[in-house]
Length: 125
Length: 180
Image (cartoon, rainbow over all chains, first blue to last red; front, side, top):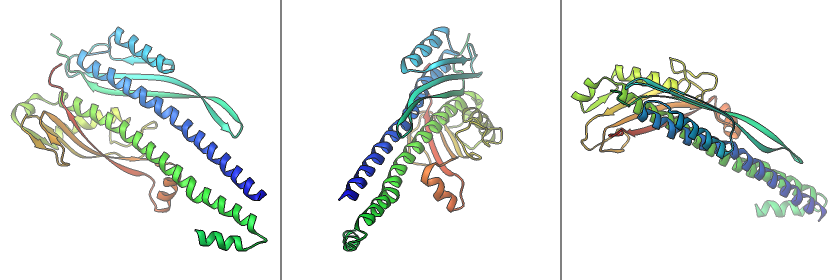
């Protein structure tokens, strides 16, 4: 009987730990997916507008801040004619609380980068 | 399983110990691989999505940057060297690759990327791409093989099989926006 109790407790602790680690493992992945989605929207907008306008840059900055990213750096081609290359590079810091061992938690910082190149579709007269 | 349990229980002196062994075996051989499988599947899906986004952007950019003479005269451009050269350059930028499509340090790819197929449908006639997607508008079809690094259990399994990476075949058909 005591063996059963110990075994069940052990299994329970391991299960809870695995579940927590799994959920926490998905947090940065989910944040990166959100960041990619947002940046992609602005990259496509850049294709149409022929560059990253100051308004768009500020808007992107605010939206990334709302998601919870820190130390945001946005670099984008400001003006490009039809057929010219457009670059959008966004660097952010993502800080989240993570289980580091069975009984301790600590803040972890991850640097995430989105860097894409496309071609301008804006015809400048 | 029940027979095994009964067999283990029949050993009165070692009953408790055998249950611990059985429980540990269940955790190591069933629970861990199942969790690992789910996590692995999710990671592969996320990587495939990132590659698809990069390919989509590359497809549209290739269409915009090719010479208009192609778009004016032909309806289907299949693996044209000039188009492939543009596509290769843009793909290298978007997937963080070298000019020969081998990966740079921070690339999602784990090995040399291969462009299997690149076809541009510039007409508006209904057709289907080689992989069966219906095409009704100007579209760029691309099929690219990207080796990605597996993690957790699959990495061990692939190593045992003598492979280092998992080859993802990514197919993207990008509709070209008509109006700005």
